Length: 138
Image 1 (cartoon, helix red, strand yellow):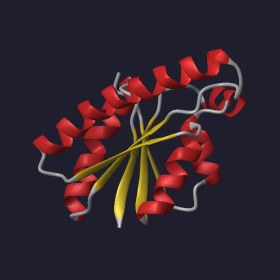
Image 2 (tube, rainbow, N blue to C red):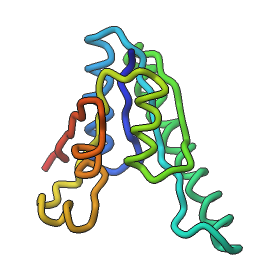
Image 3 (cartoon, rainbow, N blue to C red):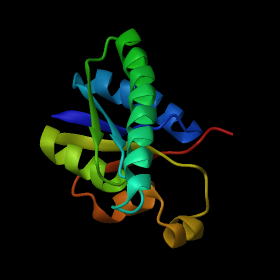
């Protein structure tokens, strides 16, 4: 089994990283660090440029997360998946036999998340494994 974390260096993700490292250490399971890198749209010259920028952003973010996991002595794996964030986390959770998906929230209202389709909101409705949603610190 494993613990899967969606990580993008947002304030919610930074706090979720700390919690995911604690959960991984407590259960003695590896941490799978995931970045969903699907660019909006699917065609045209802009798509390729936008996709490459997203992948590079993901590499940088995940490199910082690996450093935090290493400092805590938690083994980690990195996945940059060409899907939207919620689906990327579900895909990684299935591939790695996840015990839980950990994701940070932005502190937005439940109504705003439902209307705009936040990643935590989507996961709570679509994920076949438990989701731990970590609120952003004030």
